[in-house]
Image (tube, rainbow, N blue to C red; front, side):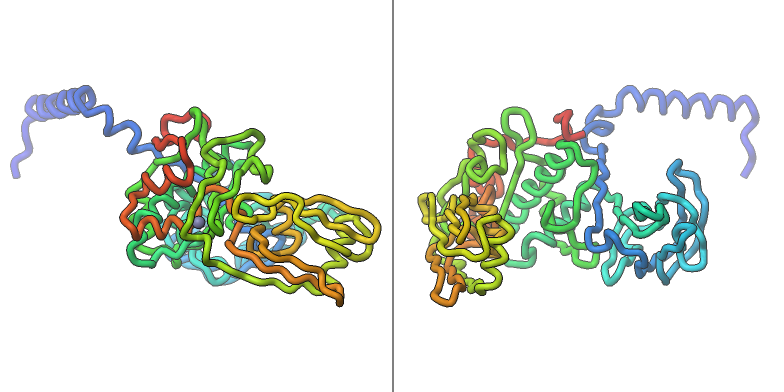
Length: 399
Ligand SMILES: [Zn+2]
């Protein structure tokens, strides 16, 4: 093909520049606005915190960067261990004498830590022994896009393959996204991958149903009076959700978290727990009421019989525990105890209903509502009455 003459090429270049200039002016604002913003979250892998040797596999090309973002090592495929010695970290045979670094695979689904595959960048932070000041353990954190995080949380927190529950999954995606952003807005710059925040499962657990629910609700969150709502959720409410203020989950009365009836849950989710005399004695000692427990009584119940406060009498004292402390101290599935009795042999018999702390959206009830034809908007309006549904991109605190 004949080359165009110089003046002709100059004119062509000028024409292309003019077109680009015009496109920049007339390109719709929305194209460069909200839909292109992506947020990355940092996720601490709780199971590996404190470990000094970690099985690791990386598929495809990868590189390691230091804290300043400079490349210090590159490779293709890796299968071995991330380990520690007195000089620092070792990635297989490569020594990495740094206090922190990032392993950056080229593609997604490329990191296997233990027996799970993950997306994203792996941030490796070395912890030191307080006495010797030598490296003693790893703290592993994944950097992943917010929306990918919500997919992993959906798969960790809810059954995603149950038929007829797509709207419940969308409601859960919005609740989980909101909870994550709310948690990050409260001073901590990372999330944990276990139930102390939200349970996150790696990329080999991700399902199409979860991806669809997250995609359909992209960027959407719940707010109350202009702020992110602490969008708590739980497995089964036993007939009525709990007032978050009543169990110290929020510092002031919050109408969207004040508790709502959920009649379908009133007759299911029954459980019983037997707590041995020695376990009960340990609770008495831990709680400072003596060497053994004499009585456990309801000090206050809510409308469905849930123990909102219990009076625990030991041989040397008495204390009152609120519902959520009760659940965690006695290791029961919920605080909705319906029968509780200290037996003659010193053991404790407990019966109850429901699963989880009972605050916010009830997943069992949400599934029922989705199957009966409710939309995710209707489901959220039931469990978080009065909350607004909007994009987090307009909220300064979530950025
Ligand atoms: Zn319920």
